[in-house]
Amino acid sequence: MTSTEQDPAGERSLDHRSRDDSARDDSARDDRALDDRALDDPALDDRALDDLRAVLVRAVERLEAAGARDEALAVLVEPRPLLGLTRPAVLRGVGRAWRLGALMLGADGTLYATGALVRAREAGVRNHQSASAEARRDLRAAALRGKFGPGETVNYGWRELALDAAAVRSGDGPLVFAPDGTLAVRWNAALGDAAARDVVAYLDERVRLLVEPLDVP
Image (cartoon, rainbow, N blue to C red; front, side):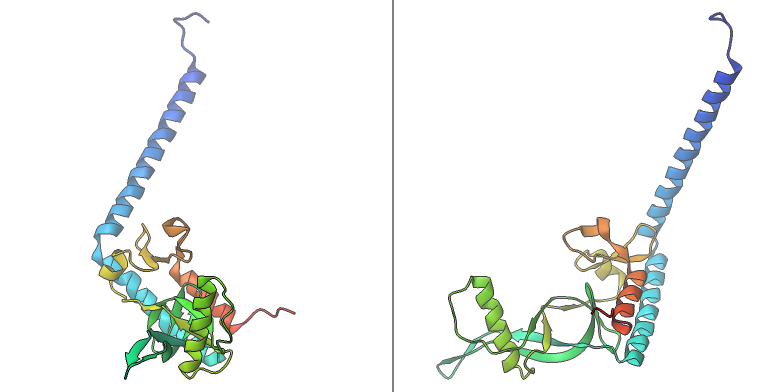
């Protein structure tokens, strides 16, 4: 074949690749347009939040029906002076909730960002442990002073989550809007948005673990 002759098969191959490239470009533009609509459409935000509220109602019903174990919620009252003495810190109970991984759920449907937990027990004798170990020791004693029973799990440092679009878009909590307009949860703060999971699936999985706990020998 001379340089002036054409290769029909080669032309078809090039044309096919061109059409594929064009289709991929069109698809990418469609995806970006969908993302832009999700970011700019308040109706999508409202729909996602309404879906979440409905999921929370069903989750409460499942947990209550199964008698799933809930845990205490407490706020830390820092040491303060009283009549010339220092009153020690107290973990004061304010309610109860089911712990669902990165989230906690109250019986009234209130959703919380999980904080930290401690088990109530006697402080014991200080033995010059690390500062963090001593702080944990003090928190365990603070839980006892809050009238929690020995060994009871007490959650503190949690935060109530406002289920409105502005609060979610502030990025200040574990909930985040996915590019398609649905809600996701940052289940691991260290991994950030890249590891965020669909919040409906996440809650279903966590509720199931409480309703049907694994039988570990």
